[in-house]
Image (cartoon, rainbow, N blue to C red; front, side):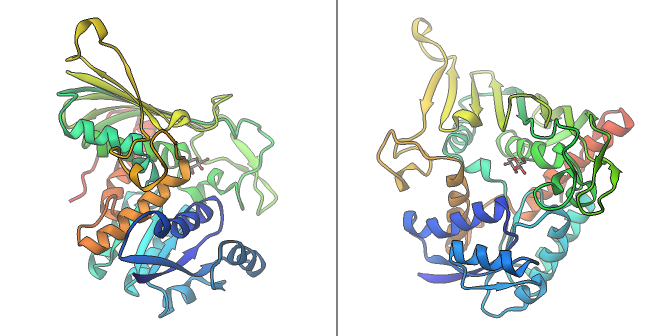
Length: 380
Ligand code: SOE
């Protein structure tokens, strides 16, 4: 196995999820490359050292530019806040590094375009961490749709609900709370949560042509943790939109951080001429499946427990019937990325694929402002 020397930037929630994936993947998947945790980079040396020790990184850096220049790093993994993705990715591409970038790709479409151009110039392997595609039940949904089991698609319905920002005393900005700071996040739930729903939807149901949206910011001002001042809140707290897909199907998407009681309720349902599929992150190893072709007397919603060895990814884990969880979707993503390197057939979503999600979120935010239907730009 060849070493794949990883330099990670950022040590928050996603830094942990990615590190766990790099550590586990070679134990469970047979691959030609083995990730080696070479260095972690964070501005705070004490925190970087503690993270390195905990996860087994060999060294630390406090300036990402140093990390990108290092000859002993093959792959830069960007797990830092959204406003840092573009600059790091473009420098890493120029330095000839492979790049994994946390979602969303960029702050907006135009910035994403520059990143995609830089990647194309450099010709480096790249991928964006839209991890939910690789939950085995979601991957199975993709297989069933691609086999044509649902027939012509009429409807797509997705939501991603949370409730962690309802308290108006919650500050914005800084560690853990940068998702509330428009300058760092780029947008609110549209780029953070709906981006996941959009990525899955584009993958399962093809491209989106037009959208009409509404957004709301329920708490208008919050103390900023870095300036200490009360500042205007620029992010969307809630966002909902209708969409028309190129295949003629109609869709509804909703996300919010104000759905009391819901912590991370990501669900989707897709209805076709011959059948329907439904998935729920709170029950992530199951896919609900209805097929009209079943004999009438026993026809109904099937509840498929996706844990058997002939179901996606599962032969690599435990014995049939034993479930895996959220963190495994990241392991699968690294496995597919490495398999892409080994086979020469790159795994998705690439930066270019993820740019299409930026175009949809841009159109959603634009439509919320213009109160009109907006066309979604298509990546070339
Ligand atoms: C927000 O709370 C968040 O952590 C997102 O940033 C992640 O992408 C999502 O998977 C879970 O929720």
